[in-house]
Image (cartoon, rainbow, N blue to C red; front, side):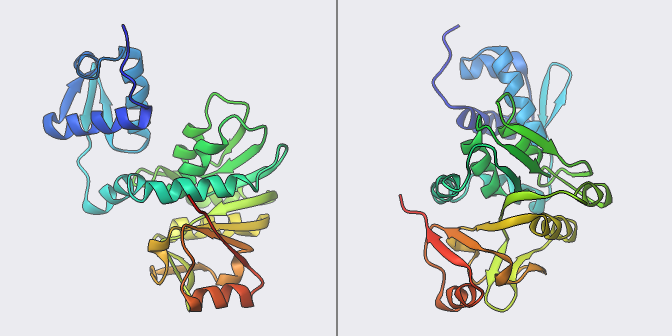
Length: 258
């Protein structure tokens, strides 16, 4: 079979769209619709299942019915993609062979993981999506155990936190739902907050990856002040109060250009 030239992420979006219309589709039907092999469809369905978008059933897959909050994370993976790609490429400049890095469970982190695929480094993460992006490569991945938050494809809870005790990494790359001068870096989910704090504490260098939509936003829980980052990478300069707060804390700001 001559397969179509869609890249995996585009193909997975097509599968998701088809399932939104049909609710269920067989592997064979999806393979015929997208003109790819059944093996390719099975791999795509595994990725979508990890994201909590679909549920694998005998012979195919069905759409997972989600609340508005759950749909949000999947939607964010396809939002501001150009900005997140630029931020990820800029962050890639900080990673050197032999490094041990930690990556949190955020959408921007998934973009960075895709850039890191194949690098001779070690990665510590609580994100199944990050681990998936680094699979089948020379990159060594330590996936922290814990309770699976299907909403975000992340692992959190006491087991995750216990597994982080005694771990030391060269760099941590993290994101936030909001960044403000007063509240610092914030997230709405307390289990994620606990893990982010431990990841930051384990790192010698702390790099925030946030697109401009996060500036001036404040989520429920603060997990780090602005001084918690050594470097912030974004697709635009932050507002003056945030930039002043970062610089006062000795943190740098870099803008990822096209």
